[in-house]
Amino acid sequence: MIKNLPKRDLFDTVRINVAKAFADTNTKEISDEDRNYLVNELTDNILKYHPAIRLNEIPEAIAQGVRGRFGEFYGLSVVTFLKFIEQYLFSEKRTNIVKESVIDDVPRPVPDLQTQFETAKQNALYALQRKKDKKDNSAIATVVYDFLDRIKLIQFTIAEKQDMMADAVRELIAELKYKLMISPYIERAAIKMDIEAYTAVMTAHAGINDRLFTLAKMRAKKLALDAFLNGVILDEADLDKMIEKKRECF
Image (tube, rainbow, N blue to C red; front, top):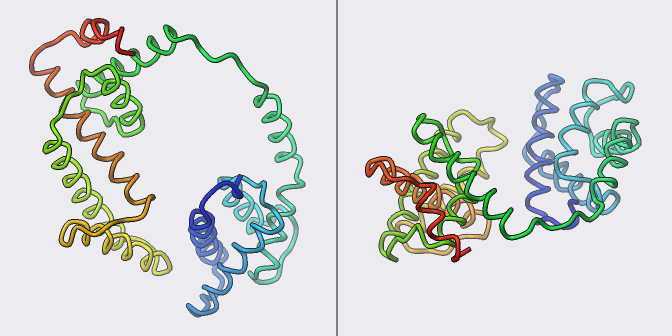
């Protein structure tokens, strides 16, 4: 639910999907001042009137609205977007999703330690196979790294971890610069701010906010996992046996 998330996450989601709505409906672009007012007002109103909506439901609600799923609309305004969200929340599809989620929310027994270990081991072996197949492990890198680190199979020095963090920031800066070139004008200011923040970390050892730090840390863990898996492959080691020997550390 958005009430449990940082307001910035909601603001960014609203900003991106408002811009998309203008583009999808071929509506004449408004001034920066009017657009900022629209996004800020809409963000505040969603928080005030619909605090239980999920963040990923907002793009769906707006997309359905601009496609005319909730009837005709005249212009894109705060009132229009709120109508889209309200109509979505009362739609049959959304009601069914909520009913299903209530069933899913029934407490389930926590898997025992052995089951957790076996699942984590299989994730690690899966990551190794993907590495051998030259496939990306971004989606599972953090959880696999945390497991291997917990059982003390991944052991990098502080200096090595610092180097990986620096490499992670460099990668993120490069990706953001590319994103800056291909993104709509409305998104560029936020991207530039992220680039400047990461650059300041590298050049002036400045601090960064929790969101950017988390992204950098996740990327650093991916780099560390890649380095570890490369070592396993080069040494032709048996990762399954390596993990089993560390079972007592879990």
